[in-house]
Image (cartoon, rainbow over all chains, first blue to last red; front, side, top):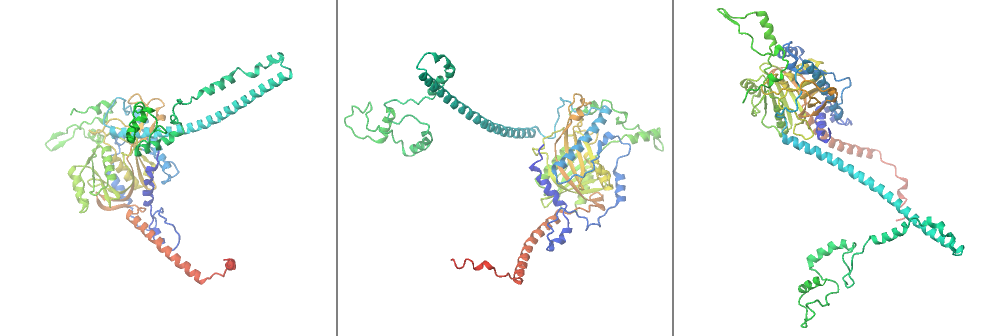
Length: 299
Length: 316
């Protein structure tokens, strides 16, 4: 259980309790006794009342008779161990309480088991719980949320690492390919030279089969070329082609400006004829908006 | 509502002593009631012990939300308590509260008093003539906090664990007894549930009583036996609420009476706040004083003229 930030209040309230009025007098002086607020108050109240006999009397008064069965009381005392737990250390303190409760429960369960009384809730016993179901739903969703956050950060970290690794691996591969290509070209050159030297005879042909590999190199070159298709640009289109990847960024700007100032019209098509305007001899500019619809169809 | 038979069902091997039948009717004679078999009767009467604890839980008027929730949490933890409406703060609160306790027929009382909307004091009082304790409550965390994830049956009897420091001194012993009686649910209380699935932990650290409430989760198949090796696999989940009690005074009778014990280490929160303010004021005064002191010192010990003062004067 995370004892985190919620419990900061703990410390503050606790510390302020142990204030010493003894430090009162020092506040006046110029000495740098820096706010001994954690000092316990031992000096001024030596006059505190402590009526031990009275306390014992009252204790006798209120306690239950001696032979009362333990099952009425259900108490157990746990020895805390020698080291005094530091109050301000949250984790240690909570651990101490936890171990005390755990120890106690173990002892009690041992006793109860010996007595033979049922003390554990069976799985089918449904009754009102001290926190409502809706509240437990909230608790569950919070726990799930926290778990999800942790998992996401883990994933992100892994993805980042993987990316790094992948990048390294890829660069290695690229290097290898380049090297292989170079090697192959070198081998072709060598083969040519050899052939030249040996005067284009047929003898040396057999030796060099290995160097060409499996024809993979051709395949790769060919395949690589056909991998990326250029977006189709029809020859008659003088508008500059369909969206290039570079112009995608300016598209948003363009769209925004179009919506504000109106679509400007395609480049260089303003004086070309469409089907309707071919036979239109009156001529004249009928207004930009009307012309705009033409242009769209011309596309 | 049907008669609850839960308790009789769960008491599988009920020892004879818990057979809460009233002692046999004494024989009526001319001289008065005469008990048959007096000796046997006495021992039997002594052994039939019924915990008839009833706690009255109230608060003062100007209580803030956090402390009110704490009070409600405690009400839900103790089925043998009765919550009452807010009590007017000022006039003679001891007497009015005593009357209230008498009226409701409770044997003890937990009174939450919130001062200045900041400090919570808790009175734990045994009626009618019992001792009463006034605590300052710190470090309150209610059950509604989402970090406290446990849950248990409402009204199931808790196991009470005390740290061994409670036996070190008389006043701790008295407090331990009072805590046992107030926080321990009576055995066959009609609103109590049968199984034990949570545990209270009271510890004394730094002269404060810390309270924790944990849910017990242990793997088991039957209701009266832990699974083998289960005791080692037991885990506790905190249910809440959490608070820390600082005993201020113990009085001889309810809400007053002779002071039996005063905590020598207790400083009231008002004093703490006053001290802090004074310190802050002190800071400014100190600064002024330091300034004047520095000035005087400088005046009285003038520096020697520096050799290098004229070094750059000619360049300009």
